[in-house]
Length: 509
Image (tube, rainbow, N blue to C red; front, top):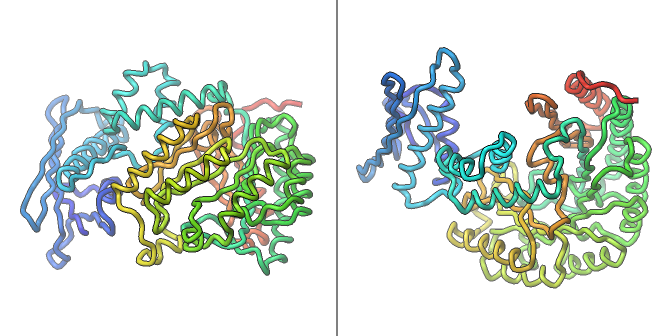
């Protein structure tokens, strides 16, 4: 599918229009007019932009070159003075062109985008911003409809989540001077077909594991020294990966001991989570280590309760193993267990999801995250799409509705959401929890209210300026070899960035 842009040659428009086109078509390319030798496009977009005194008029015409049918949408807005703020002027023009382009594509395809043309943004951040400014709810909701064309049902979901987050973390807007910690363990028993996280098969890699853990301990000590020196508190700690429970019980024990020795006031940290996502990594010995160090939240992720699906996506555990390990964790004293389900896995439809929800009902974890399958660029599934048959848009939407209704019926509430590129049905991933059991870390990472320091292989740090809110990212290498060779350098770079970020804070002794 090729779409050629006519009437305007600003290359800054290519990416936003490409993202909107991708919501409707697979393998789509939006491009500027080039020359007559180029391949004939399937569609043309003609954009007219006219300034009239204090107003500007945008007209977008989408023409199907096969049928000859043209759809035209127009929008008129107050014209900001570009001489005073060129950035804001372009932002407004881009938004109106995007709005008109979305409407023409909806007419052409019959597909309605309930998230409007919102792409690449955490939706609830927009609503939090309005709350912080004191905007009345009705006006904030209308603004989301007007500016992004988001439908009422999605805005209602955003409102539920924002209210739940502020109930769970009442001081959410006041945590900018604290940090959270993400610790990445880049090993798994096997790599799932849909995964793009740093995840290396652990069998036969023990030498790399040993040296990786040495580097991780170093990072923890150095960052811990900095936090203690500056008097900065930790809100949450999250062990992700990979699968953090892929390493041995002895290695886990030493790692958590390092956490308590290195980090300030670990006993006051609000929440510590360990992603024990792969049931085949959980043992009684590892659960005892978690209990010893007062780890109060873990994940055990089935993804699906259909054995054929697990085999197709490369998960080498059984459905029975998931259930057995859940009850093993319960008996060991784990009182806050999260489980993940993925909607739209290959070969699955409403029947398979109904079965997964029935099995979940027998366990009733404290929280359930419902993901919608996303074809991530670097995943095995994306590289070999022809091997993986997935449900169509209508069925995926029905499955999401099923999951939402099930959570309501069973007393769960939505408390965070995020969206991804190439997600089936242009839907969303939603975290549900029993009230009071929400993951604080998930709230912090999604709403970007504070700095999150990433330690370990593939860990990404997100530095949020305490005053301006400006976000700077810094990533450690994704493969253990590169990490092992450079962890000292990456640690020093992070500490330099932290020094600059918190330079105006008084040192608390």
